[in-house]
Length: 394
Image 1 (tube, rainbow, N blue to C red):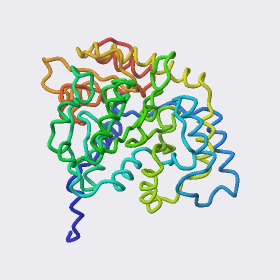
Image 2 (cartoon, one colour):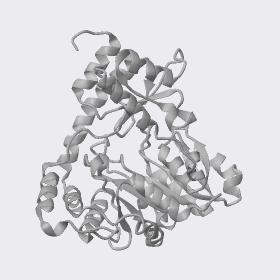
Image 3 (cartoon, rainbow, N blue to C red):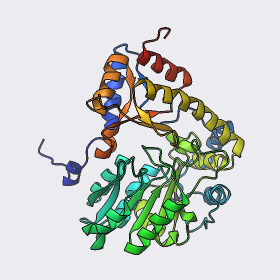
Image 4 (tube, one colour):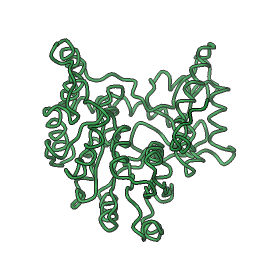
């Protein structure tokens, strides 16, 4: 083939899960009963009211036209009300909220809006791989900052302050994500204050990705937003999503919130990329944002039961883990006797038909860790545990 792809394609690899899921699909097609504990895709449905709102909206002949790129006013108001009620953050629904067709797309929009070729982008290691791939597609120089278990999976700001890129003012964006994926490290006001101070001091746009704040949060604690910190809107945006908090992953419903000036720049990109979201989906999302605390409490009850079994799986594998983790995963350090997390994950897949995620895909700092997803039924988690321990009665 004589048609050459753009050079930027050479800078990114296929998403790890895309290739691995093809392999899992082939194993299942060959008759193997593979239990997937790898992907963070909620397996539970949204609330009945949300599905009903979608169906009702889809039956209305007037709801099938193109929509505006900035979403329905009632959806933006619902996001604003949600942030006010749950996070204690007041947002102007007309200027400080931008609905997104998924947070992943928002990561790309923000990168295209603010990154010039050669700009430096700070990406956590370990961290969500899309931060790196989107930055590289935008032509950025990616500079990873290492998070460690000893450091509580938080940035080492002293080391960052000493880096040439920060001292020379070459850093454009810093990606942060708390509760952290994949480690489950929780957010805190103190951490957010330090991040905001760092961004303001160096003129860095802080991009906080916040989809896990409702999952496994203590019942007596409110979820945290970085926008609740004084001065945050000078340098921060926050993305949030209904994928995890409301079981709407396939619906692609998310939002970006923060400074109206920042969102104006993102809007320039977004308005040239998409033509808005399906109106019935936006109406359903509006209904989801109005759900009361009992629905969220019931959802977390599911995850707490699953988490207990996942902890037993980690123990059976000889892994150590922090019980304070939040979110829909369990992150564990593999035993010193294991050669690598990838070898352990492959052995579980090929010998036990259990799909686990090796931590190396999130960066070099994850090489001695594995991740278990809680997006599997209690029955399947128990089945996986029995396969590992050698107990009978599948």
